[in-house]
Image 1 (tube, rainbow, N blue to C red):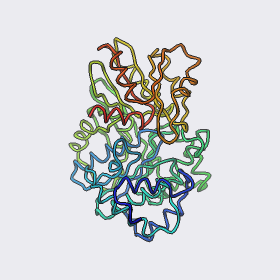
Image 2 (cartoon, rainbow, N blue to C red; image 1 turned 45 degrees about the horizontal axis):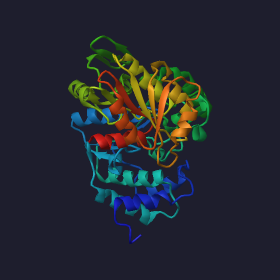
Image 3 (cartoon, rainbow, N blue to C red; image 1 turned 30 degrees about the vertical axis):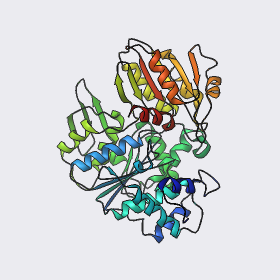
Image 4 (tube, rainbow, N blue to C red; image 1 turned 90 degrees about the horizontal axis):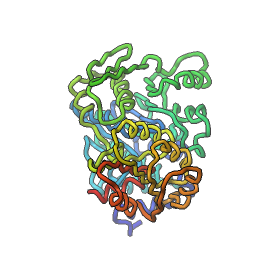
Length: 415
């Protein structure tokens, strides 16, 4: 360990500590968190799970609370360009030296091997704890019930939505996946569910866990939205917010964030909400980086996320062709994700991802064999992007999606 000096050295070291890249369970991280007194992070802790939209929901919550004058920390994963993106303190990333210090502290107290996610979660919790914040927001990694973030007893628990993803870890049906995601809910604490269609499933799961007594408070926090031409409306049984400005993030995620704000033990000003709605953005989430041609970066990587992306693309007034650049991981439902876009009749730029679990362009081709779409293969994302720019007319729309590993190289190239 004496030779490990840089943050990159640390990350390479912890990547190879454990026999499995994902090993769901709480015991290993909980024991270390207790040793370091990390379980009580802040006066208010919010945990956000769900299949998609976790990061954008956390981002809007963070922006609302910061605008209101509170000190706020966020733990989010994975990162796009740099590891330091995983922890934000009052909207700012921390120095690499602070991350190195936190990683060294975890290394000094651990007596068992940890996965990369467990190790980095613990080091992030250490940084958040010692920042002495008013509010901490935690983004779940995978699932919820057995995710490392779930060692913290949150004051408010949020599930944005439920889609079929990580089936090797969470199950292959909605009930199994919902049960894992709803595992972040706590007895007697507010529980926010962004998708109303899962409330009956939630009731059944709660009955299985607790019997007929409604220990988890979710009915109290049901909410509604109404979308008009220029504004939208949000309400629940306690609050009504009229004439809201449209957010840059998906309105479904914004609605979940407002539901979360409504059950906090303090009031938030309307000015803070409106300001955050009009300014909160997150890189790689329907991020438009060019206008002629339109270039969109989106980390959609499963059928649920692809359907949202497809809906947004259909709403655009694109006069030319869609040119879709995609690279994906083998752990994802590649076939169903790609087929979402058949109606657009796009030109495909199929990319090999040179990373753990990355699939080759030839594998993507095998998932396209039943389509009539035009496609080309590329050995890396940047080559595909540069070719798409050469091919595109100003009326076209280029979309880069499929993974954080697909979007990141283009974001680096642009900036």
